[in-house]
Image (cartoon, rainbow, N blue to C red; front, top):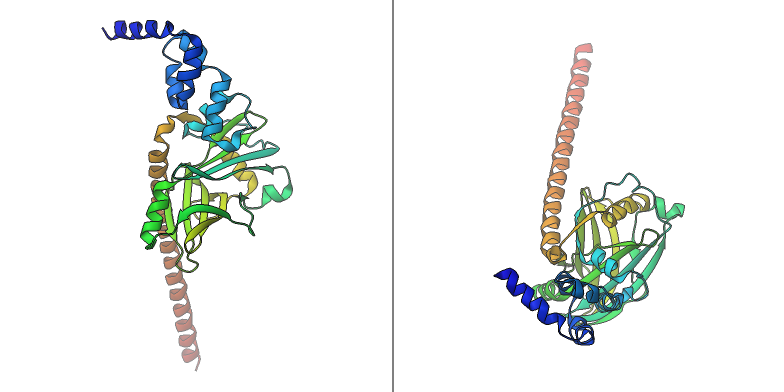
Amino acid sequence: MAGSSSSTVTDLISTVHQDIIETHILTRLDGPTLASVSCASTHLHKLASSDHLWSKICRSTWPSTTTISDDSRSFFSDVYSVLDTAGTDSDLDRPFPELISAVDLHYRGELILSRVVKTETTTAWFRTSPLRIDMVDSKDSVETPIKRGRWTEDTCRDLEQDLTLSWIVIDPIGKRAANLSSHRPVSVQRSWISGEVEAKFATVVGSVECVITVVTCGEEEMHVKEVSLKVEEMEGTCLNGKDSLVILRSVIEGTRGNGRRREVESKRRHEEFMEKKREVKEKKMRVELVFDILTVAVGVLGFGTLVGFCLWSR
């Protein structure tokens, strides 16, 4: 019965003029819906595979990628999907000469930052220094429509709900890409010293985390003063460029899952990562405490032995 109904719907769609489907129906769909429609029939698959449609969807979803992608449908599949398992290819440590970062920051659906940065990855400075890619110059800031709330909690809650970000890393040689952002912040905190509000977006990759930091400042109307990417270990140290490229390439080459799970999965993985990070820190503190106690004990014992030897030698 269900199969017959589906067949009837497909037959009805096939009677609709192709221009109407292409111009008035498919152009109104988002990426995931268009992908689902392409699976309905051979006829719809052919119409929904138009690179013009996918190019338009990519441009509207990620404005910064307007001139980047050649195969728009493949690009959308790479960027929309969420990482399931990092790649394990033996060639992952081979660096690509240039890393492209395309970033789009929205607040309540309004675009407030859209930039592309190309990073040369073959220099000795890049490979040996801690990786940090900045989208906003240290002497600059970006105006936003964000209003600071009366209470800090209101401001943080507002950013956590309404601030969205995509950070797409692109391998121009391999023609692959991946979105490192959790879409919405995994945490929002205010610095009591500077008054700045820091929103963090993240993707966990094994024992490291790709962290995107958005820092906003301002008393009434807030400005964005920092949008940066780095790769952190559980110990809190940042990986250098060479090791970070291995991680980024493993994300690009990894297996993907449904992008609709991005926010939930990213939040869950971040919380698990932070819990393990706390455990590592506590274990390190316990080891240091034991070491301190042993050091003091050895010192006291040595001092007592010295005093005893002096008294005995009299």
